Image: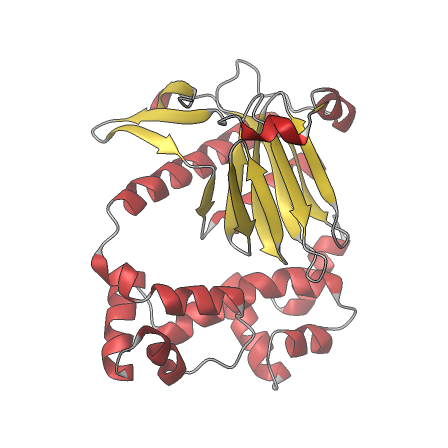
Length: 299
């Protein structure tokens, strides 16, 4: 069976609209679907694990990974029993004349139940034209480093709904899509250096709180530590240590909202020293852990 395609037109002419956004924290084994929706849905994993099925494809979702599917594509998401998922859930339209968001009842009204038998049908695939690269296919499953900071801004605008928020949301959604499409272009031009360090990247993404050393990561890839450090920086643009700290601080933002104290959050992220945890957090986010927690209490 051939896959259905949706051609979105030229990237620069899109008028994206945010319909709804929230952070969902699942219960162990919680499921959504099988179902279809009336708009497009982007899931960005913050922590935990989940299994996702879209049409005739199945994936395991972990932090910094995304799931995307669109109109009338049958999907099912099941959170892990042992490691429940937390994720951004963003409903949107690629191209809409009005930037007005939806209420939750409006969103729910567009969701229809399906059966497991419906999951075998190929999901709708979206393509956008990007000169001079031609048609870029939007994958259903991919890693999206850097998306969390934009999603956080989108959620703040959506929750606050201050004057002009519809326009602000459209601008932020356009920014997210631009970064998203650039990522796909870069991925299609993936070089050999990225493939060489893939085992190390996977390891630190799955367990950023672990006490990783350059030697241990180099061993996973089968290289001498000095050579590994060189090809890692060439491929990623930063040292293994800087990359690991960045991952830890992204995860730490969610942990800080879950734990009562900063000390508990630091311990969960593998820090024996509260001082180093606070210093790394401020270097990455511009806020102290206390300021970050207060910012979300005030929303």
